[in-house]
Image (cartoon, rainbow, N blue to C red; front, side):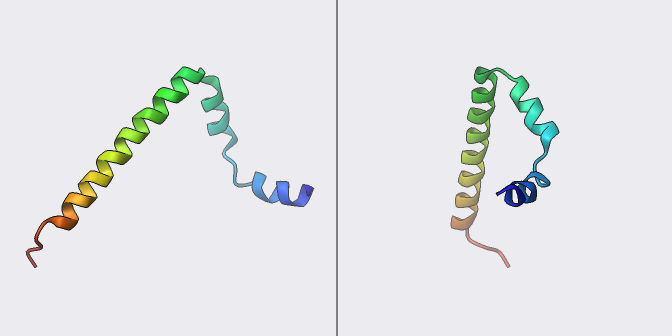
Length: 56
């Protein structure tokens, strides 16, 4: 099991993990909610662009 953990550990950005853990749960939740709004906006834009006629 230690070899598996070591294999994954090298791909973990510990500085990012630590900086996120410094935030309060409320701050982390707010960030997740902002990300969700951004994802929904991107999905909406992608959907709208698929339904527009192409001018090739």
